[in-house]
Image (cartoon, rainbow, N blue to C red; front, side, top):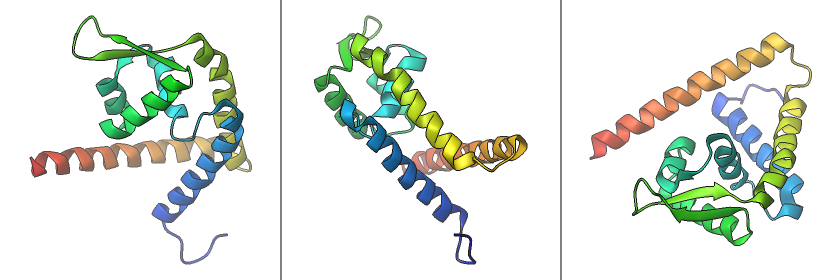
Length: 151
């Protein structure tokens, strides 16, 4: 696949699309789309949080978050309760049904990571993770600053 036409953006795009396809296929029987498993995993790791905190943590716009929450709630994976700290907001929590599928989601994500990192040494794998983290932080910083300048 390596050629002179490559770029970091292209390779990240390919990894993202193929990864989403892989995970979608693995979670298809659970009616969880590739755009939704991240919400479930975040709620599993962070506990019940409100919709705005979820959007902020995942760096996803509020409209996309609302759609995902609605679908996952319709599927019985999430419940929304009035947030006791902010009566205008809803605290979103996982249901027992969601807790049952968390290991399946974790396995699918880990399997994908193992597939794409097979052939890399442990050092190379750690370096890739570190570099991608730095790139993601930079992207977030640029996005946040450009939004502030638009205000």
